[in-house]
Length: 354
Image (cartoon, rainbow, N blue to C red; front, side, top):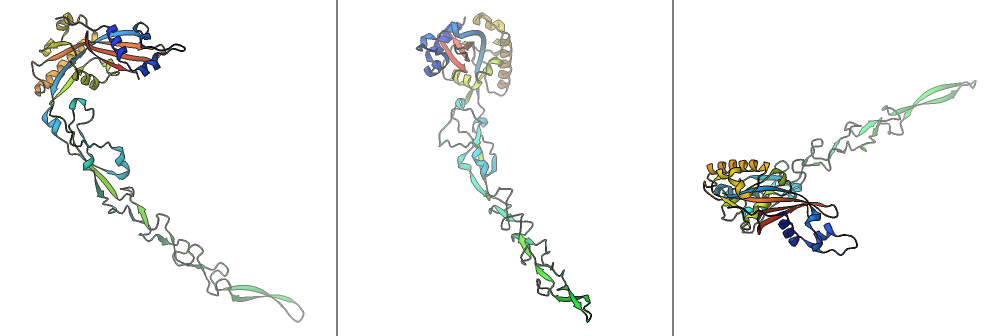
């Protein structure tokens, strides 16, 4: 049975009918002209059209993959906790085909505090240099609190010269030792750095404590566990294949979700080996250089899944005709429109129109 492939005009008109009005105005409004949706035409907008095919089939999800959790436990410092994305499903189930994340995720309820083993939860530890006292021996007086008197050089006395005259009024010099006034005849002076206290503040810490480098001063770590996402009892997921250069515009997950959510018309096959040019061209009425690659990729994946019993040998495989419309608005803004399916029953995806 021949498949009635969609035309570029059908795709464009369907897209135009459903396109967001504000975005259309941003892309197509002309100066001094009241914008109306019907002013947008395919002739002025679409500058290139290319055909491709989409191959689609469903696979079973292995039980362990849906229900199992790897039980991974992660431990982080308090300042890193906010960088993780935590989940709380509140007892609700998740549709596997709508889920875009990992199947095992950090659960909010699993978070718990754990004391740092190095600082025992204090966030600090004693300074290695001062042993936690906050003070170290004065390096200027070597911890004595005193220094040799600079005036008498530690002798306790200073020498002064006296002028002495004899009977003939002849002057001579006589040395005389007198007690050192500065040190009180002791020869020692209070250390100017420590003030006689024998110690000074430790420059390596604050008050004898250093911040724990392991926990960064928080005193605790936070542990949390990765657990399985609670998927619905559904045990099937979709597999979709199309040409590589289209993948940069539309994500495979988006195509899977779109085809899962609606009954889009296409060509139904029940033998994976029918994915070939000879079988498909009479029904599609076209073929592309990439189509062989897509069919071979789909066949290879299908046969691998069949060995794992994730697909059945005679299950339905869908092949959809598809068009890519490369568009440019009157303002020079480029975007892509994709149509997948048959005439009167097709799905549309866009890229760059926002």
